[in-house]
Amino acid sequence: MDHFQLRDGVLYAEDVPMPVIAEDVGTPVYIYSRATLVRHARVFRDALSGLKHPHIAFAVKANPNLAVLRVLANEGYGADVVSGGELTRALAAGMKPEDIVFSGVGKTHAELQQGLEEGIGQFNIESEEEGYELAAIARRMGKRAACALRVNPDVDARTHEKISTGKRENKFGVPLDKAQEIYTALAGEDGLDMRGIAIHIGSQLADLEPLETAFGKVGELIAALRAGGCTVTHADLGGGLGVPYKAGEELPQPAEYGAMVERVTKDWDVTLMFEPGRVIAGNAGVLLTRVIRVKRGIERPFVVVDAAMNDLARPAMYGAWHDFEAVEPTGEKTISHIVGPICETGDTFAMDRECDVLTADDLAVFRTAGAYGATMASSYNSRGFVAEVLVDGDKYAVVADRIAAGAIMDAERVPDWLD
Ligand SMILES: *Cc1c(COP(=O)(O)O)cnc(C)c1O
Image 1 (cartoon, rainbow, N blue to C red):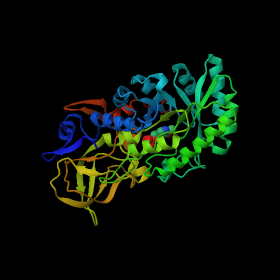
Image 2 (cartoon, protein in one colour):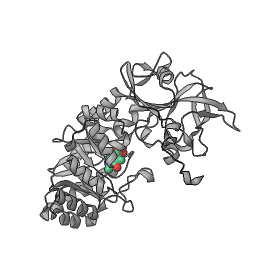
Image 3 (cartoon, rainbow, N blue to C red):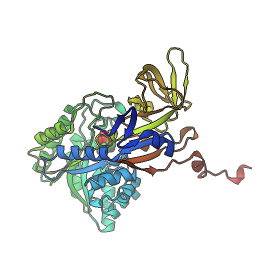
Image 4 (cartoon, helix red, strand yellow):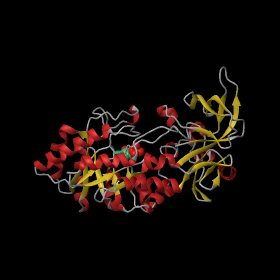
C-alpha cells in the first residue's frame, strides 16, 4: 500500500497534487511519501514482533537522503552502512551510533577507524584480512570492535545476477566451509569481540526459499561454532525482501518472512538483526517527469521524457521494470516506447509498453522509485543531479536540491599549463 493515488483524475502524493510539485520544484524530481515510509517501517517491524528484541537497520544505500533517514530514525530504526559517507549521513540523520552496522567488502583503513571513533554497534567483517586490520586499529585505539563474520552461504537467490550476493563466486563474505576456522582465529584477537554471523544473499528476492536455505546454514554454523567453544550472541540476516514493481505482482509479504524467520531461528538463542532497504523505501517514492515530446517511430511512438538513465539507472542497469503512469490520465491507452534524452540506447525505460496516452508537456511518474533511485544518480551527459521532495500530508519540502550541471562544472579546473 502506498500514498500515491488518483483523486478526481489527478495523481497525488498524500494530499499534494503532483502538478503543484512539478510547477514549484521542476522536473525530473523524486517524491517520497512520509506516511508510506512509516507504514512500511511499521509493517516490517510488526512482522518481527514474535522475535525477542530484533534489531532493524535500514540499508542506507537504498535511500540515503537525510530526511528519509530521519523518518526511519524516528521509527526506531538503525542503519546498515557500507561506506564512511553513509556512516556520516546516518549519524547526521540522528541514528544512534550503537544502532549502526558497517557492512561492505572493501572498508578502508580510514573507514574502519571512523567506525571505531564513532562507536558504532557492529562491524560485519567480510574477510579474515579485514578482521586482522580492524583488530590492529582497535588495539591501537584501546578499543574493542563488536563484530559479526559475514559468510557466503553459496545459495542462489534467484534474482538478477547483478544483485545476487550469496553465491560462492560472488565477492561477499567468507566461504561457509572456512567460516569456523576464520571465526575462531578472529575470536582470539585482542581488539575484536566476535559475537555473531551475518549474511545477505541478494536483493529483490521474490521467493523466501533461498533465504530459508541460507538461514538454515547459518543455524548449523552457529551450532558448530558453539560446539567448538566460540561465543555467538548475534545473527544478522541481512535484507533482500522484494517489492512489487508491477501493479498486481505478488511477492512474499513481510508477515510471511517474519513467520519463516521465527520458525527457522527458534532454537538459536541470539539477538536477530535485519537490514531491509528496498522493502521499506521502494514503494515510498516515485520519479516525476515531464514529457519533452512524442516522437513518431517506425512501429510505435517514442515518448521522450525529461528523466533519464542518469536519474533512474535501474532499467538501464538491470533491465528493471517501473510502472509508468500519467499524472492526469485521460483513460485512453496506447503502446509506446518510453525513453530519456541521453545519447545511449540503454537510456530506455520501457519498450512496447501499454500505457496512458501522453503528449508534450504532460506529467508522468515512474513508480517504485524510492529505493536505488536518486542514490544511483549521476551527471552523465552533463545533466544535473535530480532534486528530491518529501511529502507529509498536505505539506512538502525539498529535501535535496537539484544540483545544476553548472555547479558540477564549477568543481573542475583547466590547469594553466594547458595554454
Ligand atoms: C544492499 C544491502 C542490503 C539491503 O538490501 P535490500 O534488498 O534493499 O533489502 C542489506 N544488507 C547489505 C549488506 C546490503 O549490501
